Image (cartoon, rainbow, N blue to C red; front, top):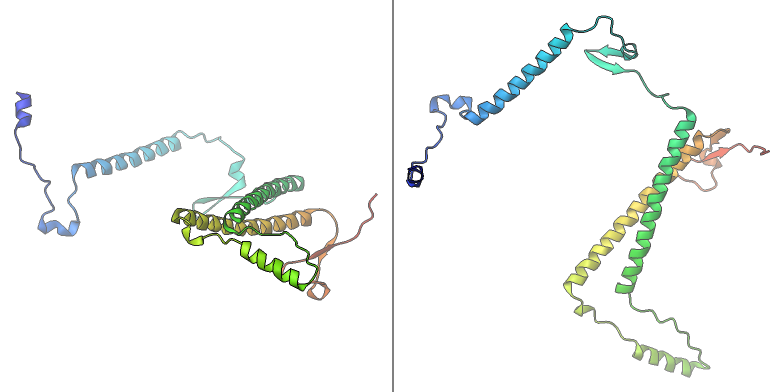
Length: 229
């Protein structure tokens, strides 16, 4: 009987809409909306209950060093400054590791650029004839030049498929992007190397503009010469 009951077409009951007198309250809340709202409410209620329980059963003699290392500003905990958290040797070691990572990435990008340039040069450029001919006089030179111009064959550029053209254009875009990335990595490597050298021991000073041999916008430093033992 249950199979026959399911075989009969039933009327599709539509959900009741918000009455026109209550349009100002927005859409009518359905049961699934109430379930989501109720779960969120009970979750907040449970969180408040646990916090209240912790406050009631807290240990009055409880102490952590973080209690005296932080301060409360407008109800928000502000930790103390950790500027001197690491020693000078530890900072130098971290700088060296960062510079090594940047240098490794820079070398990898340069190798990829060389490989991509070689592929595009062999695909796109015309074969260069570097054979040198020696002529005894002007007439023989003209004859050799005419023979070379006749024997030169220009590849038909119009017969290249569209797929090859699109791939070549994409490779050129990738090459330009990698070149710009290499320039950015080189600037970053130079800046990090300069900061690392400035952290080392030794007297140094920043040169003025009139002391520079080659004027540049970047700062230039000069170290005092020391006698090495």
